[in-house]
Length: 422
Image (tube, rainbow, N blue to C red; front, side, top):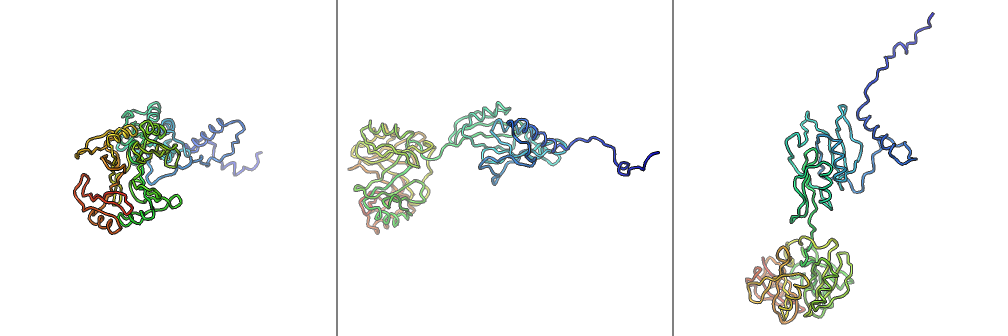
């Protein structure tokens, strides 16, 4: 005799094995792999939903690339090996086994990718017949990154070379995406360019009033009120008071301030000891005819060139005047590596640096005393000359010159300068 039938047992469906969800299986497999490879004693209690730590500074920017690739798992491994990418989470795996979404940190940016989904029009370059865009990756060492990419399976499209904008090469990743691996050329002054200049003057407060009236400068005080920094100009410009002999004191960029200081002394000039400042290593000097100047090495070394003068009040040109221009040419050739090109006027010389004129451009000419004379850009030379006279200085009537319509001026403390209407 049998007992009563258990209704729950009678209604229970037969046990039938089913394939696990691919996404769950992939996440579980990755978790087990991490646990097995972890150091002994590591607890296996982390939730499967816990995200890996995001590298510092990484975030999606206004524009984030989202790539379709032929084999997302392989492509992820490639980006890790070639570009030092970091996985930001476990990929989302679709029921058919394709990776539907993955995120990587590349530098300070997020890269998103997924396998191809032709049914919605998403295909990799290798499927479409070639790349339709380039991805530019800024790196410190493009040679090493390109070599790592090729070793990881990339196709070399263009070897690493130097160019005016920097150094770089091009590779095609396994999915056919075109990567420009680049290092931008450093900005800032080249060796021999003017990185900074200071108007030396007896009375800095009077100089501030004068040049504000003539050029519309906005100045802020520095170093206990003895100095001024001029705001909003392409060339870094300041003023320094307490100097009995007015002049422009130029500060030129050099590859190594200490080596350049030794050249100054060897050429007959004098130097102070080099010091480290926030803007680089700097040494104050005087040439063999007594003209003060400074040399500095920017923190990253000389660059590819400073910005061009951009508006009224900017320093657009300067002249080095000395009783013996031949000695000056020899001195600055030794110290700065300048080469000299004769100007259109007899006895006038234009320095040259690698790549052309120094920035801002300048000239060397005979003068009664050693002095550096700045030329400032204005929109109306006649009106600016009138403002000079109204402020207590002197100014000639503007006349055509080498750089444009020029008025030769002297400020109310005896410093020569020029106004040029471009």
